[in-house]
Length: 118
Image (cartoon, rainbow, N blue to C red; front, side):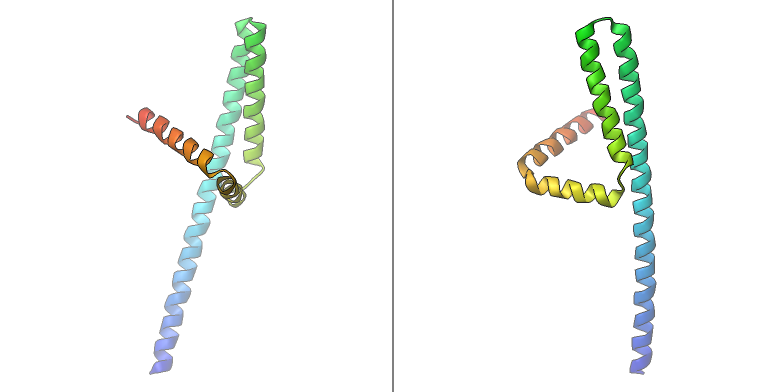
């Protein structure tokens, strides 16, 4: 009787572990797809800024816009070169090194999102 209960518990634990692993894999895949989409968006934005800066005619504004586009493109390449686990590890390390700045950035992002989603 006790062996049957133990065997049944092992089966339940095994099934639950498999389901959790599957869900975690799906979440990671979705996050990786989101990262790739964000990287694509940054690349597109960089191209748009670069195109607009050429039509402005002002050399100083053009150089600032080109520098911004370069940074956006390097950010896109950084995102493309990493997976979700790597980004989460780096983000966690950054928050540990600079907690106050991280909270201020999070509050700012939350504020902007709340205004944008109204």
